[in-house]
Image 1: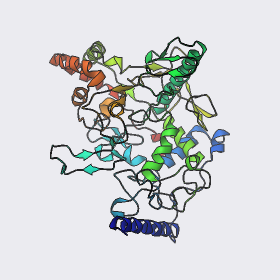
Image 2 (image 1 turned 180 degrees about the vertical axis):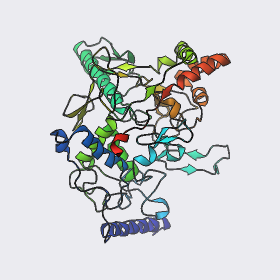
Image 3 (image 1 turned 45 degrees about the horizontal axis):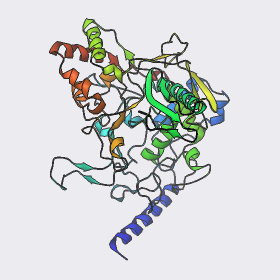
Image 4 (image 1 turned 90 degrees about the horizontal axis):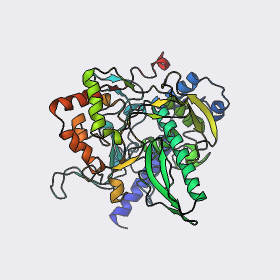
Length: 470
């Protein structure tokens, strides 16, 4: 038997040993309370909004331990990268850090509320510093640059900075309405074969689609997957809802397996714990996050107003659309979720004009969502591209438009936090945004200062969810 096989067998043996230890810890108990709300409690409206938010806060802040189900089980020799059977760093049996298993709570990486203040205001649902970046699915890391000494530390995974979570209820509502519009346009294409249909929703163009009587021509679709589902969560636009994101995050960061992902009463990772995250857990977490306060725009002096004009004139608003409007003010939470049908299986609704989210009402009867984004993926050029082994060349350089609401307080900037200032972030734009970057460079010093002053009026809320702490 070769050395590698012996090491693998040793790792498996240690994994089984640790699982056994986790299952038999006399005097220890899980950190999650046993009497958590069920999904039916939420769907049957047995709890008030604040009671649901409080239960969601518990899910957001509880440091999961091994008795809750924290961690992966025995090493999966067929897939050591995906959640469920990953190794641990130096065989510690608990944490990996360089591919998830990197925290015990959501709160650990979402704590910086107003980062522009010194000291920063900390609280619930904030952003994370670069030390909280998720290191996603690498198979090779060369931090000493021993490969070619070119000044680039080799890394073939993804490096993602945690954004703040304020206003995500409005974000999901906009996305769901855009998805519904695009699905209707797709159906329209079927009804008129060989006639292209423009895919425009809320003023944003996603290209066009044609049905030839047998199949769709998807070559002209832009900035969204071929299924025409808007996915506002994740730097690449990976997830269509808060719940969809949380299902993956629970498994990646904590090794906590949701029943709706692996099955009821199933110990898929073999760690000795069943039903680690229940349907009710994800439902109350969705309520807590969806109801978080939204970012705000502070009063603008003349400099800020001038800066807003420059922001418009040099074309930043082409992608960073200041406000998107919804038809409804109610966010519908669904289970089970159907990505292409945001109206299916609604079990709870949140009025986003009420506290704590408090979005402004729009003339359409819905809400105004001042996110400064278009919910679309764009190619930002080779300098911004990731070196992720699991993506093709085009996908590596595409990112969902960054939402600029609250941008004053959300440094470091860009998908991986490489920019420590607003100017650095703007200068890193390439690809589809190269013209806007060059127009920024061409501004006079005074115009540049005014544009930056405008951006600094876009703030995070203060004291988010503080009412739940008293």
